[in-house]
Length: 328
Image (cartoon, rainbow, N blue to C red; front, side, top):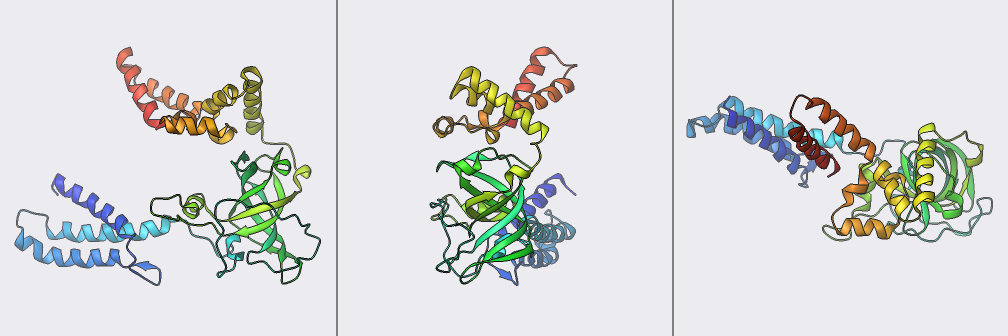
């Protein structure tokens, strides 16, 4: 096989991935990959006669097989809700809710619901699967790894249940109830399930795709949270990180302290003011606070160890290039 034939195989793989965007499917199976494979078989017979110096019959057939594999591989890697995913509790009909979180429903779960809602009201038990953070609407957001549904709204009232579920929920709770939460904490969250909305226009923010990339297919606008006080202590690593953030905030004040903490441990674990985030995004320096200093130091240490036999200047330039690429 000639070297340029390897590039053709790579292009066939890329073409197979791009073909998944075409709306040609049969029972959920993309037909574009099959079309590529069929055309490649025809090309393996005809093209060697028409293009004698071009790829051989085996190369043409292999390109079609690679394109077909790429379409199926993309489907396997694309996150999809499982049969017991919590998102399946949302009715198929009914309006989608937008990303903007409305005000919580001021109604206790023990009281009957006066009118059935288009979106189910549930009480879900699960484990907090991320570091809680503050949103722009002054609510606390975290990912919930769901385990069971304890209550589910019926036609007139909340019905007791103990249904086993799976999946992740994008949960937002009021600020007062969200204070003091930490990862691996088991909580009971009551609120309204909603289906995330896609992009309103081409190139816009696709909230549904954003959640799907993180393994979530539904959100929960919560107005009640229970069970947090009955859990054990936070993980040691999380406690250590919080002590670092608190120490730097006390020593430098705001926003210098949170900004330094974001550079050290990453912005996902720090409630950095949104005006500071927007400023860094505007000037194109979001990577400075997106990646933790620990990961940068780890990459730097590995690169310096690999280039220890080279001159100091070359080693420094190589390490700087690798760390900059890591941040970007």
